[in-house]
Image 1 (cartoon, helix red, strand yellow):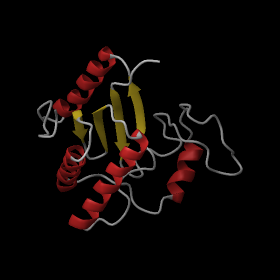
Image 2 (cartoon, helix red, strand yellow; image 1 turned 90 degrees about the vertical axis):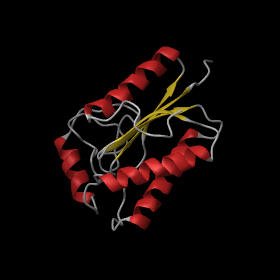
Image 3 (cartoon, one colour; image 1 turned 90 degrees about the horizontal axis):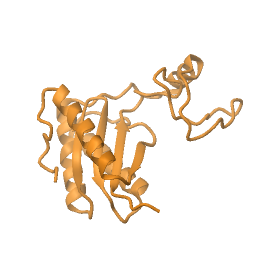
Amino acid sequence: MPRTIGYHIVLSGYGLWLPGDMRGHWSEAWDEQIGLIEPRTLHDGDPIRQRMAAERMQYNPMRLSSLMIDIVADVIDTCRAASAWDIAAASIEPTHTHLLMTYCQRNIDTTVKWIKGRTTKAIHRVTEHDGPVWCRGKWRSYIFDDGVWQNTLRYIERHNSRRGESAQPYSFIT
């Protein structure tokens, strides 16, 4: 079995990539009448499912302000400093966040949940926003190959460059 080098984590803002999204979606069917249809499979867009999801939203879609982006960066740095993993690349945008994390011995899903919880609490503490910050779950891929690692690093750096930032705009990047 290949050794895990790290992870590509993507956190989406609440309400910005709903089940049924026309870009495709990974959502499991959550309606009893629909049932569970091919979980962990990329599904085509479905306007009916997207409408149903939008109708069930209890809060407005979440876009991070500049202040919130700074808060997320600070919290990620604090979490990183208290942990045995590092961040090799990051892009924190109003609609979503990319993290390229080195391998950690702790469960990666629990680690990401911890980061999401800490960032949400900090945003609630510092700003007037009191609703959800992130969508449920995350997109996570395991990286086993140095070539994939380098491609992911460049992909995330391009996100920053397209926004007019430096490729590595955060001080916590190792």
